[in-house]
Amino acid sequence: MVKKNVLVTGASSGFGEAIARKFLSEGHRLILVARRKERLISLVDEFDASDRCLIIGLDVRDRKKIDQEITGLPVGFKRVDILVNNAGLALGLGPAETSDPEDWEMMIDTNIKGMLYFSRSILPGMVERRSGHIVNIGSIAATWPYPGGNVYGGTKAFVQQFSRNLRCDLVGRNIRVSLVEPGMSETEFSIVRFKGDREKAKSVYEKMKPIVGEDIAETVFWLTSMPEHINVNQIEIMPVAQAWSPFSVHRE
Ligand SMILES: NC(=O)c1ccc[n+]([C@@H]2O[C@H](COP(=O)([O-])OP(=O)(O)OC[C@H]3O[C@@H](n4cnc5c(N)ncnc54)[C@H](OP(=O)(O)O)[C@@H]3O)[C@@H](O)[C@H]2O)c1
Image (cartoon, rainbow, N blue to C red; front, side):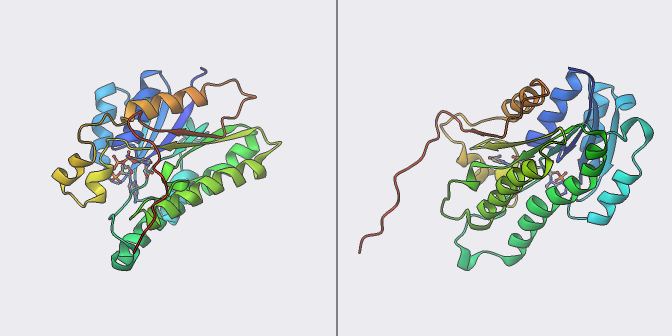
């Protein structure tokens, strides 16, 4: 693949970190975004890649800061070829009536608005150059509901439909949009969801083999390496150990 400038949000952990590692190991230039800047610095040091990496410490809920950073990108990084909208989270697994509305706002602002702000800020350059690829990390929760998935699933349904609508807006402009929808994956996702309860988080993956970050990194690398005239629209990935259940029926 020709060397590209790849911007990954949420590059400090899980999928984002693995995606950054994959593109770094293939010799690409990276713009790494997350709030935990020190983790991004360690990653760049590990690859001894400070000449081809730019670190941006920010919260993806901060639209003004995103616009400032994207407008002010230094010369070598100005052209973003691949944007991976990965930063996101789930908070809580309780029923709607007892969920914390602040958790809901956090998920909506991060998973939906963060993706929108980065897309809106980077798209004009892609449109002008008639080239680029946006990869959004959704979830199987967009399509398949589960108890306690209420707002998290709702945010990922937004990611799914926004990705499709973006394809419609961009037809004829030579810009690709892909949606990757993983199932159960062991990252820091469950630790965040259960607010630091590592035991509870670990139990989610007990006695089964979940997806890991490298699996999703391989997928993102593969779909961005496809011939220029090919657009992978949507890809849903589960561990072999995960599948659907029958509809639940409540009987009195
Ligand atoms: N793990 C799963 O089972 C699973 C399944 C399907 C989809 N997903 C999706 O995959 C994506 C990545 O999650 P993961 O599993 O890799 O979890 P993770 O290990 O917790 O990583 C989440 C990443 O998002 C970043 N992030 C979160 N909130 C942010 C904010 N407000 N501003 C900037 N960065 C923020 C975090 O960085 P900082 O904390 O340093 O800011 C971190 O780098 C998410 O969109 C998630 O919904 C996960």
